[in-house]
Every structure is written in structure tokens, then in C-alpha cells.
Image 1: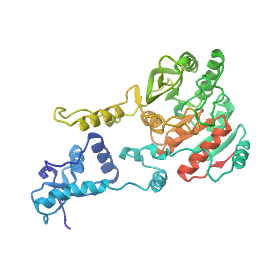
Image 2: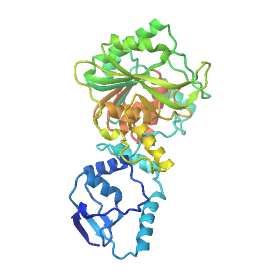
Image 3: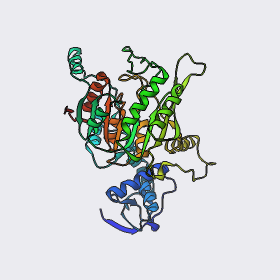
Image 4: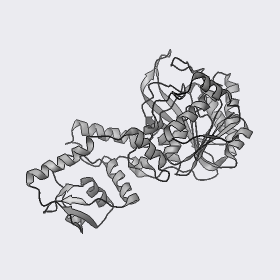
Length: 416
């Protein structure tokens, strides 16, 4: 089949094309073309009307490309053209990925951010059993007992320590002079929280007098400060009931608290309050002394450019959902995990992904000294960031190690 090059302006979109190409998908196609080249000719008929390649056509138009490769499908009748347009689009939707192989491929790609093409870090979020199914209870307990405070592990390009977030020497050993670009963490909330699974998981340092808790936070943040680059952003999850303690501790570290983000969950947690909790707040700001980084990818905004009057209900819902999901506002709408199997306050990867993408670049160092379930580590692995994590409880350190090994195929190495 002969490949020609013709002017993009000479190509005519098929006006009955039923396949939708929303703005966010065109952005993904543009990024693919920029990353890998324009490798797929647009299929057209003898009159230059598109048979296959409408998305590429729209992306190339936005990229202001002049000459594009095409193939001419002259052998099709009018009915065959219409049928082929539908069949070609539908057949690609009739099957899905082998998820195990997909995870292996995604985790082996180190230098390309695959999220920009529509893959989500939630692909790494398989149910977390913590312990390998092949490990006996005795083997698990023995492994946890060997994890003493100060134990340090290398996980590919990342590091994980069983250590005390308030101990400056632990943090110094974890980082070994590495400067941090982004601090993202989820400390205890001082609410004596107990998990809802049969294990009734709890969190250390989660029940103190407020003044003691504030000093605990201040010690942890000040231990981080000397390792944090000027201009480095922070995201610190907290409870509304201890907002003042968190704000005072941030101020004591000399950092600038700028905004409070709100994670709106898709369901509430039943409790004894008059108003049931369906959100968690996150304090955002940065260390002064230099300009802070915030993502300049304006594709995060889904602009409602086209007329809304003639759109179907489904199309309007899709537009609104994409707008909500991609706008970097102070509201974060992400579904909560239905079961917190490995840690009582697990955060969904999609939630952490958004913050990491907004305030860091590929290759940047992200610190989490209250690692919990290891969500920050898993997101950094997928987004090509370097993570340094610390967790006080050996039980959770063990589960993070097993989660990383299971999801990436990379064996953790104890280095101290």
C-alpha cells in the first residue's frame, strides 16, 4: 500500500464520525506524536475524506503540521467505508490489556512518563495483602522482628527506612546528603484512629496531648527542613481537629503555608459526629528562599470550547467530569479505598499522583517520612521520581517492601 504526503489542509474529516475525541485525548495524541513521531498515516478515500485517523488529524492540526502521510483506501464502496469506520473503532475497544504484563511493562519503562498517554498509577494499586500469600505467619513475624529502628533498604532507585521521623540522624542516614524537591506526607492525626478491618490496625503516635503532639510535628518538620531545597513544595495531610497544631508546626519550621486542599471522598465514614466526615484536608505551601515549582501543563484544564446546547446528556456529563478531574483547584475528587487492608488511613494512588505531578518534575526527589502504606513510593516509581520514605512501625515497613516487590518485580536490598 502506497504512502503519500499531502497538505493537512486538503484532508476532510468525515462529518458522521461517531467516535468521540475529547480535548484531553487530543492532548495525549499530541504528546505521543512529540515523543515518538507521527508514525501512523491517516487513511483517506479518493476524495481526501478521512476513513481512519480523526484523532490524529485533530492533533496534527493543533500542532500546525503542514505535510502529513496518508494512505488511500480506494477499493471500498460507500457502505463499506461507513462500516469500516465503525468496525475499526469498535474492534480496538473489544479487548483489554493483560494487566499483569501491562504492569510489568509500565514499571520497566524508566525514562518516559506513561501517565501523559492516559495510563493511571492506579494500575499499580492491586489489592494489598501486605504479606505474600506464600509466607507463613511465622515467616512474616520473623521478618518483622528483624526490622529494627534504623534498618535501611534500597528499592531500585528509591530508599525506605524503618525509622523515627523526628530523629535528625535517621533522616540524615536515609538521605545521605540528597536534597529534596517535594515533601509529601501523611502524619498521624492524633485522633486514636483504629482501622475497620478484622486486624483493627492502629497508628503509632496517634494519641497525645495537643501540646505534645504539636511539638512532635514540629520536631518532624524541622528535621526535614535542612534537607529541603528552597522553593520545595510540601503537602501535609491532617485532621481538622488538629489544624492549629499542624499550622504552628509548619510555621516553626519556617515554611510558608499557602492553601488548604480538600479531598472530597465518594462516600462518608460513619461516625458519631453530627455531620459525617466525607473529606480530608491537606496543607500546601513551600519553603521560602526560591521560586516554587508548579506544573505549567495547561492541558490540566479542560476548557468548554464547543457549544453545549446540542450535546447529549452523556456528553455533558463527560465534559463536566473531565473538567472536575483535570482542573488544579483546591478540591480533589478521588474515590476512597473501600477497604484499608494494609494501613488504616491509606490514600488512593490517584490522589497522590495528582500532587506529585503538580509540584515535581521527572527525576525529582520526593520525601515521605510517615510512609504508612507506601502510596508515595508507588506513585514515584510510576512517575519516574525518586522516593525516600520512612516509617516507624516495622509491620508497615514490611508491607511496603512486599508491595513494592510484588508490583515492580524489583527485589529490595537491605543496606543497613
